[in-house]
Length: 215
Image (cartoon, rainbow, N blue to C red; front, side):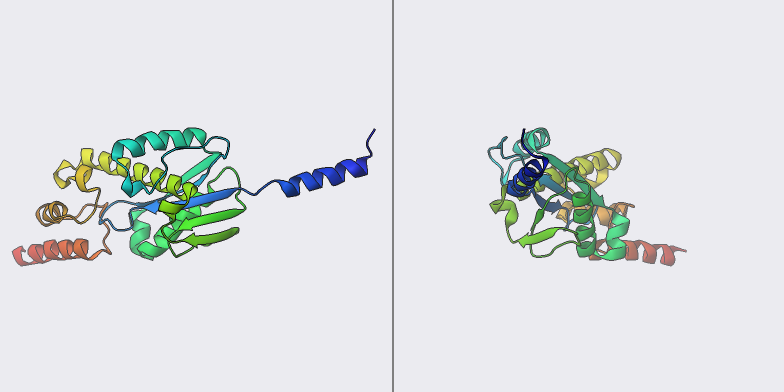
C-alpha cells in the first residue's frame, strides 16, 4: 500500500501540472446611441473545438446565431452581463464597458487563472489579465466572447424594435445611422437612449426648446 505522504505529494504534483483556465472577454455596443453595453466571458473546452470562430463583426447574422448555440453547448463555461443605459450615462461608456466585462468574468461558474480582454483596456479583476488589441480576430476564446455579446445585444434590440417600431432598432441596432437620427428628430428620445451621447442630448434639447417656445 502506498504511503499517505506519497499520495499527497503525487496529488500536489498532478494539480501543478494541470494548465490553468483562460477566459476570453469582449463587449458589444460601445458606440450605439441606445441600449445597454453587453459583455461576455468564455472559457473554451480544448476537447470540444469550435470551427469558424472569428470577430463577430466579420460573420453573417446567421453564422453568428449558429456559433452562439455551439459556444453555449461546447464551452466549459460562459457568462453574459450588461451595463445599463443609466450606468452608461452616470459613469461614461468606457467605465460602463469595464463594469460589464467585470460582471461577465465574475459570473463565470469556473474561476479562470488568466483573462484575455479584447482591446487595450482592462477591467478591475482579481486574476491575471492581459489586453489583446484585435483579440476578437486573433484569440479563439475572445472571438467566442465577441459572438455571445453581439448576438445577445442584437436580440435585445430586436425586442426593442417590437415595442418601438418607428425607430428601426431591428436595422441599425441603436447605432447613429441617418434613419435613427431622423427618428430621434421626429419622435424624440426614449428611456433606452443614452442621454450622455451628443445626438441624443441634442434631440432632448430641441424638444425642450420647442416645449418652452410653445408654452
